[in-house]
Length: 539
View 1 (cartoon, one colour):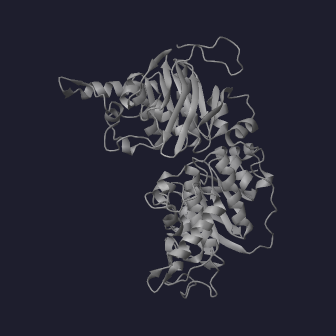
View 2 (cartoon, rainbow, N blue to C red):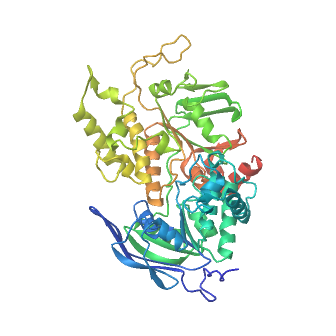
């Protein structure tokens, strides 16, 4: 057993810090990313690092990982100054970093990934049996002896890959492990297992720096909190469990955001029905799902990862072809399995994996905003660039996309601003006037191949705030509600129950591919929804 964990209430004897970062500064051209940051981490504690996107968290952990060299300041381990000249030097010093985008090699085995860069070898020959034996021991220590060392890591689910990353960290005899948004892609039970592993590691004296946007996780797993804002540590060593949420949010954002979900008028009961889903089924994912969404209404789907939530959204949008059932928009069928038809009819979707599914990362902000509606700027084969740029700038200003530069590559933006770019694409569509004639021309009312552009009627959002900080979330919530206020129907999925309850007018609870409850959000609370998610019992 390692040293006793520090106590959030300050009682007992605190161990000397394992890590001290003093006055860390880092500049990039035109940007001072870190401005004299201090950070102390004790052995056997979970020290949480909070801050909005762009606050300096990523830069700080890259300095700690040896990926960036600080321009000023010093790093001490066990009281002695160290120079982390690169990732290898950091590993040798006992510091391991597990990034949100896991750096595993899918084509290699689990054992090969665990010992990548420090292979078990003798006389130049890899000792495969020794590597597999060591991998098996490490995986067993993490409580996952079922993961086969010889198995291909690319075949593992997200939770399994994360366990392999932690085993790799332990293979370097890490004393300090940095975890960047480790729960972002995990289901509820997988997060529970992650926390069990973290508690066992800290009980052995391993220190953990934990980065997350989910404040409820901080309270459950954290001991102390350091808050970054604009490259500075505005608070350090706060007790994770007893510091009020309002205080943490205020430190992160510089403003009071106690009421993230202000009350808004309920959509009119006689508002026209925009979306109707009838007995929709996708074999192996969900079955017999029926619901509707009215103009100006926000309907949220709550449920565990794997319950079928995202598959329902993707099938409505046409990214998956339903086994049976119908999707109707404004009372007329939408051609199944055809996203182009859905867009022409007035659907827009922001998928969960925005980087791989929604954004052209190496394109500019402007190019990403207008990519779905270039035809509105085209005349006889020529693009009206002046009008296109003017529309992009209007959306940038409306959504406060930072920095406000339409020529900036979208890959350089923070997660929250990338999500705003995706919303700007469909917000631009919301400015399109509905066609004078109903789109589509098939005898069954389905879309014809040359359906005209149509104003945005339905916006589908899958995990719209994943990886987005508290301040940017509040801004995104305001945008979503503004769109609903314009009469656009909104259908969304979120893994965070408070977000669904706070944002939606009506909630559908999904469990094992079936809707087990549908009702007004104001009539539900978090314990009731969680009970239905876990047990499937309706109110």
